[in-house]
Length: 214
Image 1: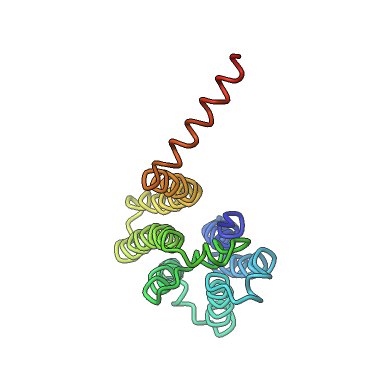
Image 2 (image 1 turned 120 degrees about the vertical axis):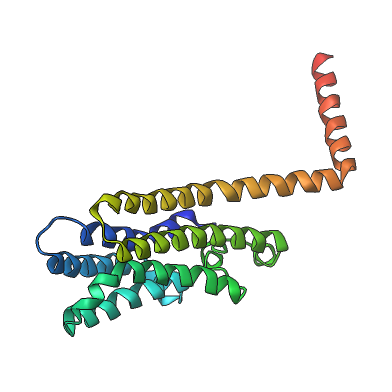
């Protein structure tokens, strides 16, 4: 899996959230700047993916452009109140919808530079489903928090907003860790199913050690 390419695809969303919530002036000015930053970063970090039709990158640029036009251009300011929920909803739909249509969004990143035969394997697809599902859970929980805070705009509850970052960090850590773990488990299963290979390797190692002693 091309982890750098996948994780870079989330940079515009992270920057958008940070800028939109930053105390840089009026909320409208922060949101305007956040949209501009999001669009620019998407073009800079995912230009190749956009040309190749990567689902996450396409949804990202469409989201920023459409809501920039609606809120800033057409002055539909009430939509700004729902932008956090809408952003998490968009990412949640990407995760679960692509899995529903049997094409988990991580597949476009994980198959980069990988042999086509391996891409078709059941273990390769299973790993992508699992990683996509983890991101789906993270975004779903984040959307639930945003929706809750939208319905209960109590300053005393705003600390729950930090949980979104915890979910994102956990998803990133899992994405980095799981591919290597899955490959290791696959190798162990293959070795268990072919004990003759283990015996052959063991005999070769034993022979080598014996020769060195002599």
